[in-house]
Length: 233
Length: 182
Image 1 (cartoon, chains in turn purple, cyan):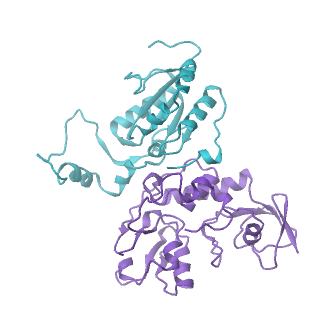
Image 2 (cartoon, each protein chain N blue to C red; image 1 turned 60 degrees about the horizontal axis):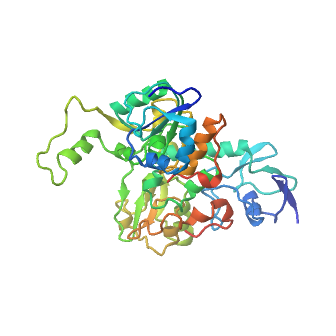
Image 3 (cartoon, rainbow over the protein chains, first blue to last red; image 1 turned 60 degrees about the vertical axis):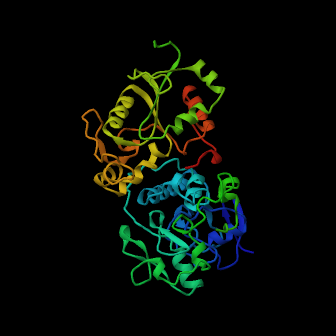
C-alpha cells in the first residue's frame, strides 16, 4: 500500500483517497466542519487545513499521494484554524449558553479542540430572524456557518433540494426552497437526512429542547477528537 | 483597607452579568483560605469597597450595556496592571447581547410600556440612572484585555488555575477539557 507522512506517522492510503479520508481511516482526527464522510467534499470551511510540504491546503479535497509530508497538529496550523473559527463565531450569533445544541455542537467542539478561548475580532451581531413555521423543526439562522451539509443531504440523499445558499461572499446565506421561503411551506420532513445533519444549532427538532442534561451531551464525556467516526447527530 | 506589602491586590466587578461568574469564584471553596494568604481584595462585591485603588489583577464579569459599565471598566483598566475578562458575557456579549437584534426603543417599550402587568407604563428617565447603550458590547470593544476565561460561568478550577498562575507570574494555560463556552 502506498504511504505518506502525517505528523511523523506513516499513513497508508488507497489511490483516490483524500488526505482526510486516509487520516480518518488511520484513526487520526483532522478538525473539520463542512466535511462529512457521507458526502462529496465541499472544501469551503477550510478548518481541515494542513501543511503539505510547506503549503497550506484543505485536507478534505487534497488527494493523498506518495511522499507527502503533512503537518496536522502544530502551533502554526492550529493558529490558522483558530482564526477561521473566530471569524465564524463573530459573523453569526453563537450564544453557547442559550443554544440547545451546546455540548453537541461541532463548531463549539472543534473550536475548543483548536484552543480558541474567545474570538479576538469584532462581533457583528447580524440580525437573522428564526423560522418556526414547520410543525416539527425550526431554523435558527443565527448559527448558520454555510457548510452546505443540509444542502447536500437534501439534494443528494432526500432528493428534495429544500436548502440552498443564496448571495455571494459575506452576503451568502442559507435559504429554503419554498414559495415564501419558509420551512413550513416546503416538503421538509423530520425523517429527512437533512433533518439530522446540521453540525451547529440551525436545524433543530421542536418539543425536545435541552432534553440532555449537561454532562450527558454528545461531546461532554468524549471530546470530538476521540470520536473518530463522524458522530450521530 | 490598607495595602499589605507583598500581597497581590485583586479587584473584581460584575457589569451586565448575572453574578454567576462571581459565584464560580466563590466555588473555589476552602481554597479561598489559601487565596487570602496570597491576595488582598480591593474593590469587589465581596468587600463592598466602592472606589478602586491600584491593583495587580482586575477581574471583569459581564458585558458592557450602559454608561456606568463603561466608566467602571475604564477605571479597572486604568488601575489594574492585568485585566482578566471572565465568562461568556464579558467575552462575546453573551445573553445581554441578544438584545442587539432589537432597537433600544423596542427593548424599553417591551419592558416598560407594552410589558405584561404594568401598572403605570413609563420609560425610566431619572438623571441618576446610567444611560443604556444602543448595543451591548463585549469587554474587548472598550478596553484592552490581557487574559480571557471562557465559560458560563468558567469553572472554579479554571479560575483557580488562572489566578494561581498569574499570582506566581506564570502564563495561564488550560487543558482541553477545561475550555468550554457554556
